[in-house]
Length: 288
Image (tube, rainbow, N blue to C red; front, side):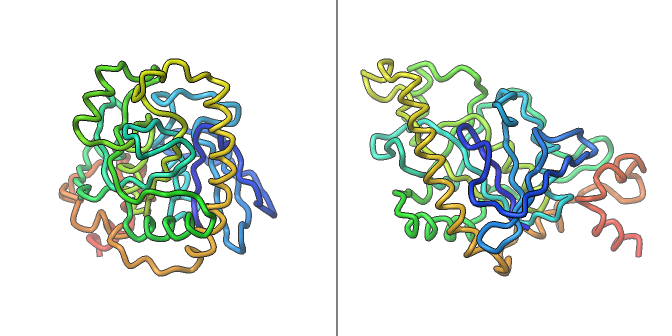
């Protein structure tokens, strides 16, 4: 199954057929909303609105662990995450897409791991998004005739307020490309869940980049969100056609193989039960 997470402006997935709502409970609570399962371009897809239908959750309130674990429990192995972002570079224009391959964490105290409470894991994260998925999304953007920049750095700020000009200038001095409020947390959890993950960053405006930035109206940003959502639907459809049945030759599906540090004999039973959807196969092997 292919997972799609919709961000600001994308609260449903056009073109889904045979739709079924599934309310999934996880050991970390309920996800942002019911997952919408259906078929798109012949593939089974699970769609989740990150902020909930009606946009109910701030970036800091999103139940990220429940969202990713719900996808895992449904059998999702690949996630295409769509996210509205601000541009930190003049050459990354509104209505263009960016496929970041790096992140900078500027969040404050988010729950960004499934582990703890007696079970420790350190996953590799030098390449935080799946290169194989990025290539497929790049090809899908070309097919959908959406301008796409492959590679770049996404600054994940805390929000919900936008940057000050001083902060924006700092991030630009670091060479970052776009700024958003959600995707790094998802990427970390997806890696721990051994799910391939890619960010499709949809540019809505320039983040304090131009002197006239403050003159940009909410109406204009919403118009860009709407257009980006239309483009995203076309890109996702083209991507799903490419991803359906594709072999996962990347290392995402075995990210925990050498990451689990704790001696299995000392892991608390309650912790193991909570994390069984993630680690069950490894602990079964060690027990055998």
